[in-house]
Image (tube, rainbow, N blue to C red; front, side, top):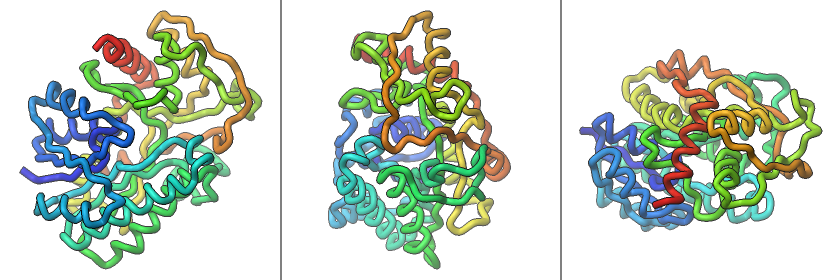
Length: 339
């Protein structure tokens, strides 16, 4: 049984990835200091998998504390690094918070990976590295342009840190540039549960539907898109979780030629904000209260993926559509509000 370190393991993507890893037979150690997550997530992972995953409540910006994780658990075969702040709007308002946390934690984890000769490090990157692309869909050859937010810039800088810092070492890096994670575990037992109100569209939709917020704001309806609202590529959280495991396994098997490696993850379709709202209304039989407001700083008009490379090198195909995303997200929202 190979041992894998998952940083940010109690967060939204990290927790679903841990479930996928445990069910595939891996031993997992989580690191999460609960800055934007809850210890209850460990209970949900155990309920789904039957395994109690160890979590170390470590601030990865502290190099000495990060080193203690590796000293306590020698022999990691792989690392999946999620731990980061992730709200575009907050990054615009608090750029130093994002630069300090997202970059320093990555540097410390990567340095320890190098020192302990961990075979691969899978990095949670983002489609925001492409800035405003000249044409769609986005491929891995699409030029990396200036990011539209400090959050996006930390992902660009993170990729470069790994390229420079791990060059010529025993550790290979794979940066997964994914689009908009959404939805929940199909069991209905786990999903996105931010400590504050959800900053992303799908939790904002479900929170509005259940009455936690009075209205959902649609930021701008004057973009050059089908209905004037932003277009995004929504990928189901379980599809995304599986892709992290497949990336690690492909690296171990020597199937990845790039050093470093970059892979897009999306379902290859653009959905407007209003189309997403209407998809939710269809699967939930619920009428949403929404209003159009001004554009939000940092948002780009449209972006969606060409995932051909993920299909070819990972054998990965998305299994869930936008309606599945909305259905599972709504099931989870209703469940978590009654727990």
